[in-house]
Structure formats: structure tokens, C-alpha cells
Image (cartoon, rainbow, N blue to C red):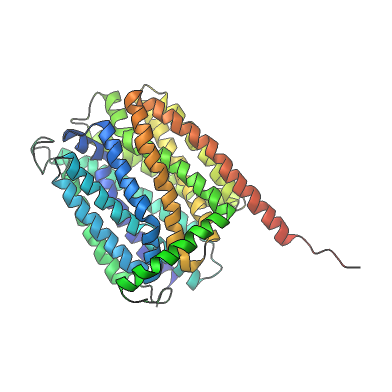
Length: 430
């Protein structure tokens, strides 16, 4: 028999394994690419191709999960990501890297919204009146702790295996051992999902993959229509797009930025791992802090999100202006603290606006907005970073975050008005 506690444990374990697998390669990914002859602009193109793949497939794959089941789609997703990692391991040309990033994009599109929708629907099935913000905040905390542990492990592995061939000269090098370990974690995740995820009560088996693909166009049409008709969803998608743009600029350029500050990347893998691990731990603290902060803000999730969206923007701008390692690290970590606070209020607002039977496809629409921003951040800000400086690109991204806080304020105004209408006493009829 399923209980909320059991469902949470399964979901949190799955989330932790997935993000651990991603994080192990995260601190060194750009450096791996550079060691094999890829320049900053090409890295931006690879990130853009990855994001574009997700943009094309995001909503259709969410519709597929709604049609045939979230578990089956999640299993396919993580299998493709695993294959993409193996292609990456053996890549030495831009074309091969492009294939690896596209495969990873296909997997991430399939994964987006699948287990998340299963989790929220199962919680609401077991306890219809549950406040989903605390469980989502805990999931966010576990995600960020896993990212922190993974990045720290990713920094330690090359140091422990420093006797391997130099970067760019062989398939197995100190840096690329992180790809191998990441694949092992993904294999464990596939076993966990296969054995423990049960959606028999929240989603009936709707037949074959072929039948599911036939349902996708109508499901996608419904999801897009709902997104356009609901003003709150439109505002939330706009804020998500801005966040995706800023995050892409951070993920693409943080390691080259800090490499310049500390005088190079060779022999400094532990610094990069510790730096990124610290940022995710700050994000985890922000995620847990969102629970008492939500109570302090009286469940005005949009207002809370607006405050910390602005906090992120200011942190990124100040980070861009720093020239010393210590202050740069401090504001880099504060930036992630702000992200951690915003995530669960944003997720709660979105889930409250969408119907259960279309949860995967609608969460995929939200991810689509984030990746659309990521394309802009990777390509446009990548070009700006190459032609001007990384700091200039970050200042532009920070300004965009500051402007986007207005979108959350508009959501707060709409929700406050709706609450006033709901609780407005009926006028007595004489």
C-alpha cells in the first residue's frame, strides 16, 4: 500500500540519483570540451543545439507521458541520456559532440515533467487537500544537495586519477572519468524506477507506444491552448524564460570566468568541484528556507518569488563586477541561494493552475519556456561573452532577471484579487 511517506522516498531517491549523475560531469564539462579543441562560441552553439532539441520535443514528449504513462517515458528518457554520455566520452570532433548533446537533449525532453507529474498527482490522490509547496521545496533541496555532492565528486575524481593520460589525448582521462561514473549512476536510477515507481492508480495503461504517439497532437493542442488562455500561466512562463536565459549564461561561463581568476584550470579541478558544490548547497539552503519564508509571506508565493528573482539579478550583476576570487565566490553562491528560494514557489504556482490529466504536458510547456531562454542565453550571450567579456554578458542577464520580477508581481496581484473575490461577503438582498 502506498503512503505519502513512501511516495516521497521513491521520488526523492530518483531525483537525487538523476541530478547526481548530471552534477558529476558539471564542473568539468566546459573544460573537457575546451581540452578537445572546442572554443567558447562553439560551446555556446552546442548548448544552443541541446536546448533547441528540447524546445522541439519538450511539449510532444510531455504529451506522450500523459498519454501512455510517466514511468515508461521516464525509463526511455534516462536510457537515451545514458547513451548520449557514452557518445560524449568517445567524441573528439565538433560533429560528434553535437550528436552527444542532441541525444542528451532528447533524453532531457522525455524526462521533463514525467516523474514530477507522477509525484504531484500521487500526492494529490492520497491527500487531495495537501499543500504541495513543502514537498516540492524538499525535492528542490534534495536536488541541490545531490548537485553539490556530485560536483564535489566530479572535482575529486580527476585529482585521484591524475596518472591517466593528459586531457584531449585519450578517451579515458582524469576529466572524462566523471562521464563513466555518471553513466553508472544513471544505470542505478533505471533500476530504481523500474522496481519502485507505481502509477497504476493515478494513470491507467493507455496501450502501445504507437497509440500514445497518435494521441500526442491533440494533447499538445490542449496544453498550448491552456497556456495561451490562462494569464497567470503566461506570466509564469515569461519569468521562466528569463530565468532560463540567465542560468544558461551562468552554466556556460562560470568555469572559464573562475579559471581566469585563479590562473588556469589544470590542477585546479578540486577548486571547481568545491565551488560548484558550495553553490548548490547554498541553493539547497534557499530551497529549505522557502518553506518558512512562504509562511512569513502568508503563502503569497508569487510575491516571494519576485523578491528573490530580484535578489538573483543583483547578485549576478555584482558578481560580474568582481575581480577577486573571494568576493566572486561569495556572490556566485548568493546567486544560487536566490535560485533555491524561487524554485518551489514557482513550481507550486504552476501546478495549482494546471489539470492533473495534462500535468506532464503543461510542466513540459514550462520547461519549454526555460529552454527557449536557454537558447537565447547560450547563443546571444555566448556571442557577447566572446566579443566583449563574460562580465558584460552576466550584467545583461542580471538586468533581465531584475526586469522579470515584475511578472511575478503581476501574478501576485491577480491571485490577491481572486482571493478577495472568493472571500467577498455576498451583498444582502433587501
